[in-house]
Length: 89
Image 1 (cartoon, rainbow, N blue to C red):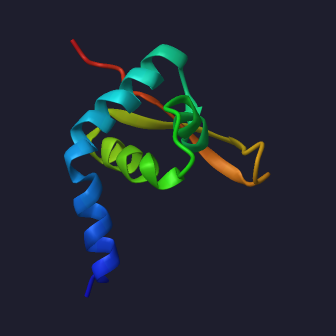
Image 2 (cartoon, rainbow, N blue to C red; image 1 turned 90 degrees about the vertical axis):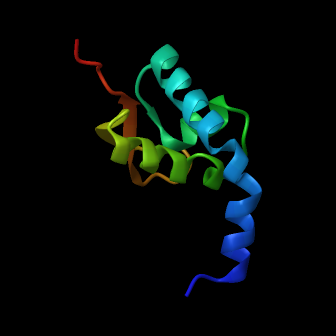
């Protein structure tokens, strides 16, 4: 069962999801591969939950790919960098 807080949080951000997808892809297209944290900062958010689930959705949809792994400058943990997927012609 999903906790009501999770449902409420999703309902609060649901209208922004398609817009957020576009914003994330645009940042990756402009700046190249970035970590989730770097995407978050580039979009002016403080909470990683504003971008991390959307990035995962974009990866699942094939619009974004996991590019490589790097050390996070904040946590010093190994994290993924993602990039805009190359469009086939």
